[in-house]
Image (cartoon, rainbow, N blue to C red; front, side, top):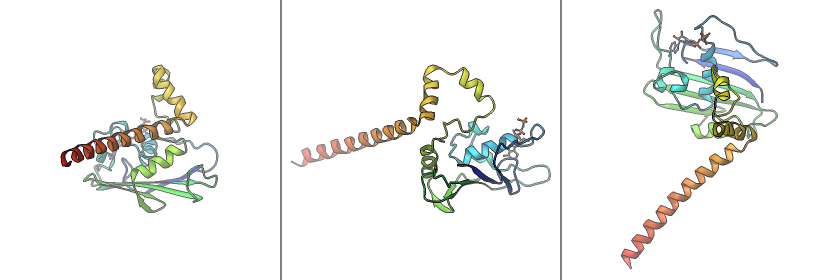
Length: 199
Ligand code: ATP
């Protein structure tokens, strides 16, 4: 499932709409310190469902919106789009080209789009999780992460192996099903109490 393009607009140092097209083979991005190389991988992680502002080097999510410079006013919105070639249908949808967009406004409101259609963050997260590219996956390895993996505890390393083996998504689904079951049981107990009172 090759990544075809990344379109960044208003995300961190990318005040202007910037399109990066990825051709086949390896793409290297070079530039001086502080020129925005890491911001590119962060933009990709953000569209794929990253929810932690801290892991995007901010304190709250609107910190990812272009904050202004000596020559430019701050912006009020950030938008990032990823376009995938999905001819092999690794992303579980009929579409052969898949675009995923995330938009954030300074007041904290967010919008998500799958092929230009409004959707929930959950739809995007599930799409990538089902393709083995959840946000805990190792499709993106940030600076310092290699060392972190080497130094991780056995349980943490097990999680990495489970993610790669495709087990992790079932664990998440199981957790969710268990939470729903617990809520359903609570509701049943409440109904039983009301029934007993009315008898
Ligand atoms: P290095 O080679 O040192 O790792 P880099 O090329 O990876 O650097 P980044 O860390 O991606 O650079 O970019 C840092 C730059 O992004 C800094 O100049 C910082 O001021 C700018 N930046 C970060 N957040 C914002 C924001 N919200 N608005 C404007 N600029 C931002």
